[in-house]
Each structure stands twice: as structure tokens, then as C-alpha cells.
Image 1: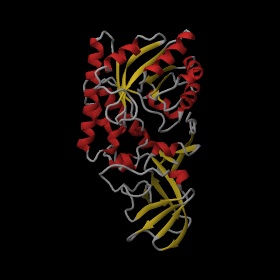
Image 2: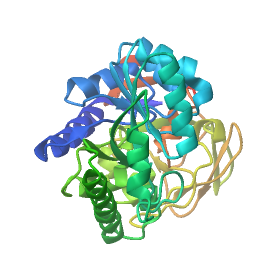
Image 3: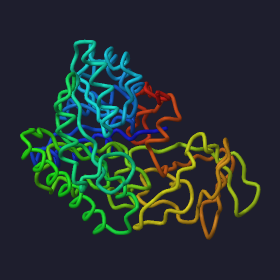
Image 4: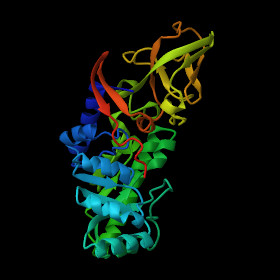
Length: 365
């Protein structure tokens, strides 16, 4: 796993500049890199804190000294002891979208004579988690959460994950616009009930470039932007020249003229398919003969993954790859790839600069 230092810093700075220009707080989702070192870089460039996917991730980052962590995930009160321990180390906030769960957290925190910041998760179209903002009792739901002891209501939070299914840039822009409209409308209804909504938080890399243009938001939470990947290129969020993370793979077999075998199987690249419409998304990654080449080799398609093997179909003219040769692969989904390795290597061109531990790898509970 190689991470190009120049591209990494450029990606961090560009997103921070876009958020800052609109007066928005940037809270990167650290599940993409799972590295306290990179989280400190993001915070040092202006991010308010980070997001984590699970408590296990948050525990790693809190132990590393990250002082502001948000979990946009429906935590269950059975984890109260872990949350209380985290509150001793970091400013922690999390989401609720069910009154029974909110009451469970209220009871646990009140018994411990503690308080925690919570946001209400809102379903803006992805239909995964979150309350329905169009429901007649949506504002009342938020108000009931806000009055529970032990909970400090901070605001509303959403994730427009359905932007990954968009078929055009216009569709992604519409998703971002609708997301902001649904949230700000609900926030106004909650405010009318006398409950202040201090935060309106959105998060997804495909929509980030459009979310910063919306009014009424206070925070964006993209994660993938630090590395990008083949899916983000296909969705128009990035170019190949923005992709900072690549897999350095070796040819281990050339059994036929139309077939090359690489050593990066599903334990390296994952079986995730790429999504998007602006580039060819067939296969399990884009193969580059070198990172400096801005266009992947169209004659090479990773058509099948075994655990330890990537089977590459060769079509048309290409460099005669033989066992021992090296190529770079831009993965379909960099966040999952990060969770498959213990270490990434920070590089500058062909020069290795530093080894970075993926400290929160495997922390999925």
C-alpha cells in the first residue's frame, strides 16, 4: 500500500479550503485511513475533529490524543461502559434515531452523572438509518430527545449515501441540494418548538463539492477525499491524478498471452465493485504501469479475484508484462483496502519517505 505524499496533502488542503471558504466546519471521517498520524495532519490543517465508524476506532484515536470525535453510527446502550471511558479521554458525540435507544443512553448517562453530546440522524434518501424528516412527528421526536437527562442535543446529522448510485453529476448535485433542504426545513420546525439546533452536519465525499454551496449547513464530514479511489473518479469527485493511494502489485504468473496474474487478491483489493458513470468501472481496480501515467492501461482489466490472486485479462496491445514486473492499482474503494493492511508507505514519487501504521485496522466493534 503506497500513499503519495504530494497528492495526500493536496487533497487535504483542497477540502479544507472549500469548507473554510464557506465558514463550514470540516470533520473528516477517519475510517478511510484509520491512522492517528493522518488525523493529526487533518486537524493541524484546520479540521475541527474526526468521525469514527465504530467505538473500537474511536478508542484508538482517543488513546492517541484526538480530542474531538464524532460517531455517526447508531450506538447501543449496552456499550455504555466504553462510552463513559471515552468521555474521560475525548469530547465524544454520537447519533440516535430511535426513542428507546435514546432513553437507554439517557438512563445510563444520568445514572453515571455524566452528559454526552448527541445528534439526531436524519434519513435524507439513502434509507439506511435515520428518522424520516417528512414525518408529521419528526420535529417532536427531536424535541423529546433534547429534553432527556444526560443527553446534550447538538443538532441534526445525515449521510447522503445514495449519491454513490447517481448516474450523472447533476444527480449528485440534486442529492446534495435535497439533503440540505430536508435538514434545514426540519431544523426550522425544531426551532419553532423552542429547541435550538446548533449543528446541521452532512457527510459524503461525492456530494461534498456541492454541499459546500448549500445554505444552512454547519459541518461536512467527507472521508474518502484524503485518498480518493476509482469510484470517486467515476463519480466525478476526483481525477486519476488525485488518487493518493495505490496498491503496488507484482506479476507472479503469465500463463497465457491474454492473462496476467498479480499478487493482490481479495485480501488486498476487496471484492467491492466501483460505481459511477464517467469512467469504465469494470473489474476490481484500475491498473497503471506507473503512478506518473495519468491514465490507467485500458488493455488490462482485473476481471476476477481469488484470496491471493488477481486475474487480469489482457486485450489489445500492452507492455509485455512478465513475472517479477510491478504495477500499481488504484482500488475501487480505498476505505476498505485500508482495513486490510497493517501498514502503508508514504512515498514521494519513487522515494519511500515514511511507514505509517494503520492503527485502527480491524477495530470494527
